Length: 370
Ligand SMILES: Cc1cc2nc3c(=O)[nH]c(=O)nc-3n(C[C@H](O)[C@H](O)[C@H](O)COP(=O)(O)OP(=O)(O)OC[C@H]3O[C@@H](n4cnc5c(N)ncnc54)[C@H](O)[C@@H]3O)c2cc1C
Image (cartoon, rainbow, N blue to C red; front, side, top):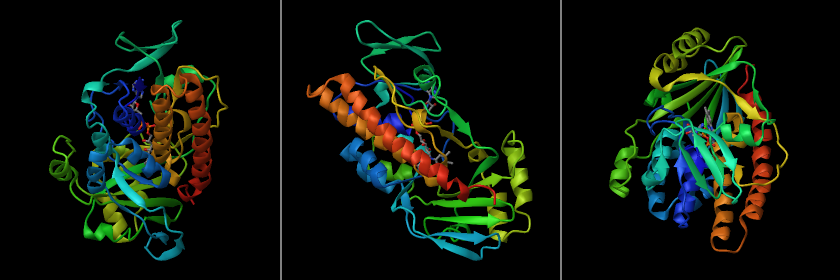
């Protein structure tokens, strides 16, 4: 049983189904479109390898076609777009849109996923299985429960009640503006950091190689991807103060902050798409020691949420998924017992997961107010 149909939980489900292992996914939201979450996620290196490992071969071409390029120079400019510093290139990989990727990861899983199922608690049963209870009073039982339920994870709260999630002081804003030639020029490579007076803005391009819905219709007609256009994703740290209550307040604040900046940046902020932009809270998990392995485990942001500053959260969730999948395949073919397999996964996952958290926390200064 997987709790949470985010990118990590769905990646694990794809890998298990690919290996012929029975799996069910329980998601709190009423459907994949119930809350728009279309922000850009850069995937590369071991994270991309892990995603490909879990995704069935027939979907690889759709993944390639429905994503964009992410590579090349990273640079710091001032608020008038004068070059300040050229940084090391970012990792070479692909820019994905979380909303599109979730649709792709749902391909072939519709009869295995239950939406509108908010997990509330688990109980380990005497016969070695585990029972999950949902807010609607229903229950489900399985051999292993994987909490892939994100930063607020109720599975983690029960399994590791002392685990701490830190809210980074200050707040941010996540904006999305449709990509035009004018805005594309702001990000010639991997990404651009704008260091303005007292405030920092990060820019990243989500330029789909092909419109995702057309790529799917052409390459795998059974897969339905959403209609969406290319965009420039920008985020900004706000000077210390209260987190804006909603996008209208946040947008006014950001418009004030960029007054007098280069006209392209002012226009970028002004033209933000209100339905896909929001205030942003940055959180990270404090390291946790390995717990006694049981029939309940954790994956992705549920255990090692990290700031988006290094672009590693989803990459790490995919690594978790591929690692756990490999272990469960061994269990399925009788080569390993369940609990030692889960323990081996947890030890490796905690290792690479919290290394990524530390790295992301260290690079938070690129995002923070100057
Ligand atoms: C602005 C921003 C930019 C980012 N950029 C990058 C990037 O470039 N590269 C990168 O690798 N990462 C990036 N990340 C991080 C990445 O988005 C996350 O690490 C990743 O989405 C985590 O996936 P997950 O499946 O663990 O959790 P989530 O995606 O949070 O999914 C959790 C799921 O569990 C469900 N759920 C929650 N509670 C319950 C419940 N009680 N019962 C049932 N279901 C429940 C939720 O509805 C959700 O669907 C970025 C994050 C942000 C905010």
